[in-house]
Length: 54
Length: 311
Image 1 (cartoon, chains in turn red, cyan):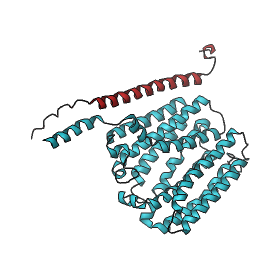
Image 2 (cartoon, chains in turn cyan, orange):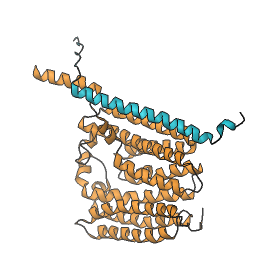
Image 3 (tube, rainbow over the protein chains, first blue to last red):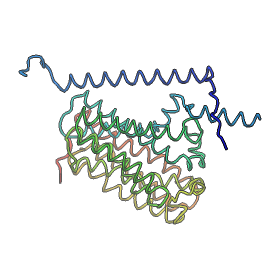
Image 4 (cartoon, each protein chain N blue to C red):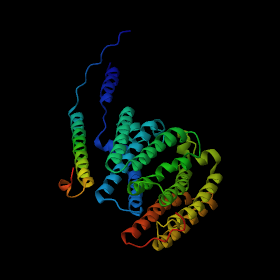
């Protein structure tokens, strides 16, 4: 028996809205992650990092 | 034809997942996460030593993410039995809002992220403990114990007791008697809490085939076990004071709370019928919150802890 490829069902406006909202939240999450890593790096390096002898 | 079309459409759309951000949030078990976060904050503040407030915040965030990841993996594995119980049938996976493979991917991804973040940004001792906690909850409890033994929540309860130890290790980079005393508080609290719940949800657990104490050994044995574990909470509640983690305010408050807790367990033991299990279940949540809140209050008010008897 030959299986036919299922036709692509377009997203409804509701689906698109849901997907966009999820993508937006993921983008915000990634931006927060970068910020957390950046601030933590500064905190761990400590104050006057520019004055330290390398 | 119309039936075929309906099935076909459902299949195609289902491959993309229909979950909203709210469904993914529900996958993290936010109510459980809130208790985990609270006990972890207490562990962080009760630990001897100092941690930069920002690193403390990152630690709590990673623990919350790890707890959420465990919840998602639990919902992935338990979707079949969740669908059978009133309390859990509206969860995102049994409801069909999120596909099992999506829950699995989300849970694994978040687990890896939380462990790596904690390790890279704070320290690897606490990250190793967090990894073990997730492993214990998902593999040991959810997959190994939950469906196979009525002792599931006794051993599995350890998973819920680790978060203050993880936070403690973020400060001290080690596990010591002080953090073990916080662990034991939650560990001893878990059986009376969940067995009280199982006494008035017995039918649901039986329907789902989960071997909880009442539907394996019967209600009288469950009531006896509840009392035994409630009595074991007495030495457990004394330990933070004996290990130099808590002081006078804690000793007075936790002593009174534990007396009330044991009294409620005695009521459950004596009353074969009635609302005693429901009362104990509600009070047990308050008890755990209040006991940890007392330790937190002592730290915030700078009330000194007792000198350690051991530790």
